[in-house]
Amino acid sequence: MPAWLQQLTKSLHKTRSQPESRYFQLATVDSHGAPKCRTVVFRGLVDETALSIISDTRSQKWPELEKASRAEICWYFTKTREQYRFTTHCRRFSASQGGEFVQQYWCKLSDAGKKQFFWGEPGETRDPSYPLKSHGDFSVPPPHFGVMLFDVDKVDYLNLRGNPQQREIHTRDDHGSWETHAIIP
Image 1 (cartoon, rainbow, N blue to C red):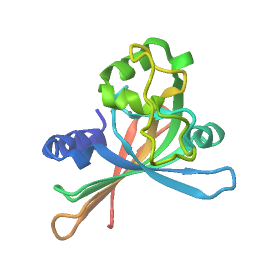
Image 2: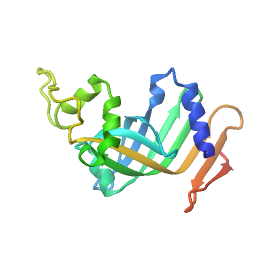
Image 3: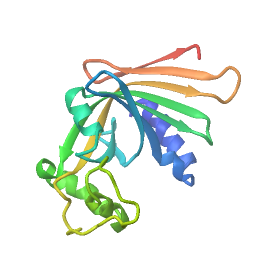
Image 4: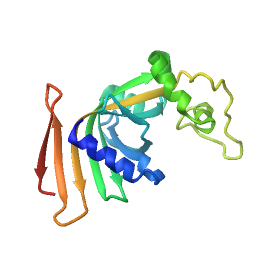
């Protein structure tokens, strides 16, 4: 297990009672080269070095990551005062192509979470006087339900506790081995 993953596991364990520790910021680039950042929900680790989230394939981030799969994730843990910046590349799986893998993520969602995928297309105009519709078969994911895996290539870890503060860069080489270097914060 890479050193950064051991640290992240500890951070998640120490902050497990804080709901905000399950959210991180995901930065992508749009078709005009402009940066786009949003907060997403962490859904777990896959193959030890891939962070997973779910997404509506009709959202802006889906085509942005189709065009340029590189992304950066910034995750700050308030309680432990730790920041992780992940340099990643994204793999995307829609309900129509992900099979059982995507179905597993769908099954883990609450009914309230599943209903959000039936409200309509993200970004469309909404009449606030009408409730959002949420009709559909909740037993199977709709075609626009997707899972994104962010394979980590580099981690910039910063611990703000203590003086001096601790900062490390973790990089993966072409053979999948990880190297760690302490750097000045």
